Image 1 (cartoon, rainbow over the protein chains, first blue to last red):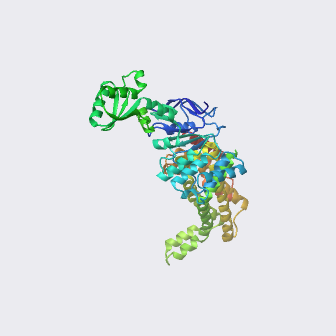
Image 2 (cartoon, rainbow over the protein chains, first blue to last red):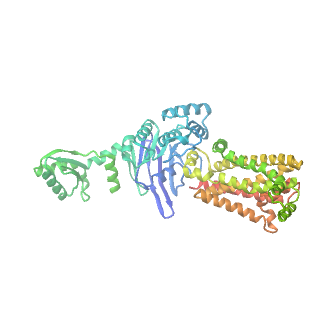
Image 3 (tube, rainbow over the protein chains, first blue to last red):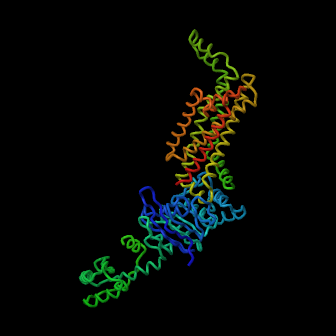
Length: 310
Length: 259
């Protein structure tokens, strides 16, 4: 597997605050990576270091195999969309993209064609007004277009959809989903958006990376140690809950008839292999009547909470 | 270097579209036109509004004497040195801060534009417009003086005086950009710029060393040059002014680079 973005021991310290703590991340090429974390977890600081806007205290960054050195112009292009993109309000969208294209030293003919196609892609081809008159969603779409102006293999997006209304969010999410072949790293704390857009996930908390893997792998991993049991009677659910707790499992009640069973903190590694089988054993041995029993497929929200909690 | 040129064009466009150039032109041309007029007709205006038999007023008018073409330039630089310089300060005080705070600077920095090119482009565009407006204003002042006093001095000396004043404004611009890079708010940036302006005004009146202060370029040196006199210590003053300009720009670029 080739990686588009790799960091080793990436650290950022502000006086007494450790904002990013020894981050080692590897983002596979061509994936759309959701960079998750609570507010203040270190997402923006990490992204700003990756794009060269913030000097790391220590550590190394490599983008598409090329080492990034702070303060030196990157030869390997990447796109960047800040959390609240602010453009020059006195320009039109096309003029701003032209400025970006010129700064990226794209030849005139190629630049003009690219601007036309990008404006079309983000749905701004018919907009003639100056950027000062744009809505927030339009600005975000222009932000995506400017990040793509030099056709970069990697695009970093800091909270691209968090501040948009539902329609704006859907539009921008669709545009991001359409970026096939480009590695996209987008930070957000809106988990449903990540589930919709991304196939790879990084979870950061207090400046440390807690999890990084393909979303499908994470779901599989978390599914294997969680079973969901739905009973026909509340009394059976209560009895099951008591027996499971006694056996050392962790129990979460979804509703009076439905429970989630997880391996307990003091249980051995062999117990985590198949919680569903263990749940079936408990149900059978105590003669409880259930409606359904199986591995619980977690949502990204479940995975996020579980990771942060652990 | 190509990025500098690209951003320089953007800066010219910004100064034009945000009406900074218009404001600058209005202020400078207003004083260029009104200063010779005021000088020429101030006495007559006072005499006109003075009540008949006011001996005190008549004495004041007599003390003012007959205005000359030299007085016209003293009035011009008196106005431009204060209001003109303050206008420049107010127009450009937030240039860097605004872009850094809004995040628009981040967008251009991630496209290969360096902080030095960023600051230099801002300075070059603002400086070129300010210098051009200064020279146009002195030229307009010369024409008005010529019409009203039938003599306006040597055109070469007049432009030399304007150039000296323009160099002072360029230094103030560099300091304003430094303040804009340093400050956390536009108000603080304005206060810092104003403090620098007042500082140079004061240093120019310090005995002995005051003659070398860049503050002299605000009024006294341009007037001397216009009248065909070479100010004492002028070359050293220019060297000091240029050094302050360059150091301010380098410091502004350095601060802009540090996040």
